Image 1 (tube, rainbow, N blue to C red):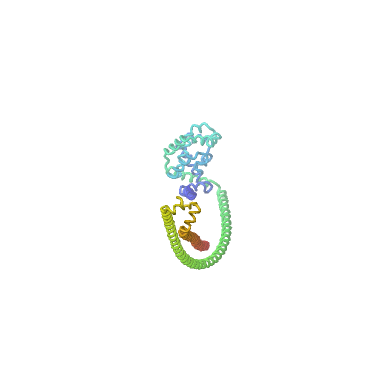
Image 2 (spheres, rainbow, N blue to C red):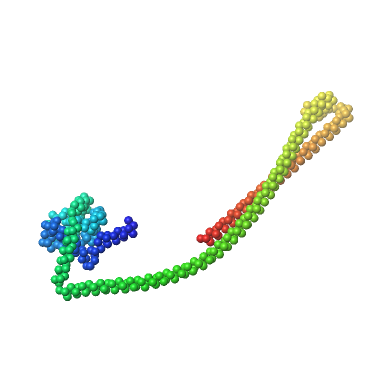
Length: 409
């Protein structure tokens, strides 16, 4: 149960159930309850009541804790919980039921004791007996079965007050007035002490409140200054934010232009590379065709040489020149010089054309490598430009949001 609810239950029991009256006016109401308990014992347990009179055992000697603590001082909690439940349902008269139940269940043991033995029994043996839940349950059933009318309790209360009035009337008036005077003086002194305490507490609270007020005013001034500074920082931050947004827009436009320019350059380079690749492929095809045509011409020449009886004497099957006698060389030298010269010229032209073709192919490959290198540099520059713009944009946004977050916090 929370503390607030527990305190509310305590207040309810003390005021609405009358438990507070037991502690007021020198326990006058508590002595009234003792008198009521003795009259109930006289009615329900007369033999035990007579025994207590014989050993001079009065109710306040053993029942004071029952009324003041609701049996919580000695008895186990599971039994106390049942008693409190009955108290909340039926009222403070339940204490008489439980007390009579305790006395009835212990009557045989109490009739055999003297004054000291009875006090020891109430102090030690009686709480131990109800450590068993069965005994506690039987006790609560017996207490609930006892019927105690409120009229009897009211009657016993009136008798007690009449007896007290008679005792006061029989007393010496001087002594009674002196006692009443002492009681009033004590009450006056207690009230004066409470008044002094309240006055001291009032002065202390006023000083504390004044101090708290001064501190609150100082804090208010500091907060107002801080608020003005925060507003100024907010204005500066908004201006900075606008400036950063403008810079961001400019950066985005510049990056867009750079990207468009880079894309156009990339497209241009790609078209140039495509042209060079097409040229190289054409040159390769042309070279292959030239080589195939040269091979065909060489094959035709070889076939012509093989078909010519005169040329066959000078060339073998592999196309190499044969060694012939010096006479035949002198006789045929004039005939073959012209053909040799023609063949050598054709061969030199073919070799020259082949060399030029190879040179063009090498130049094309070099240009392709150069273009690829430039393309890689352009791609790296575009990526670097993208990363730089993106990083600047992110850092500017983070800076703007970080400054704004600090100022608003």
